Image 1 (tube, rainbow, N blue to C red):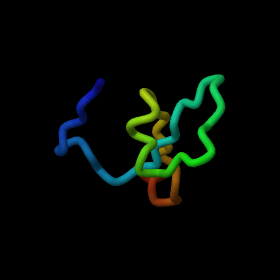
Image 2 (image 1 turned 60 degrees about the vertical axis):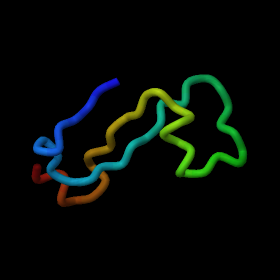
Image 3 (image 1 turned 180 degrees about the vertical axis):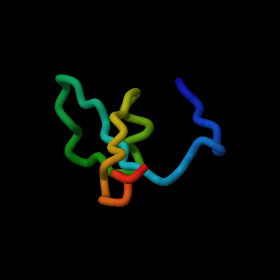
Image 4 (image 1 turned 45 degrees about the horizontal axis):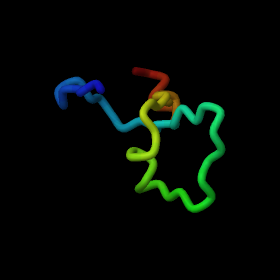
Length: 53
């Protein structure tokens, strides 16, 4: 588990779950994702403004 200090955050990013080999539950909602997965990829290139950082 990692905690990122608020002073380190420049802007919001997309978190993409590391799915592994298990299938994704059909009824999974976005509010359950943080509880269902232990690791996430950080998509810092979600918009063109992020490329400048």
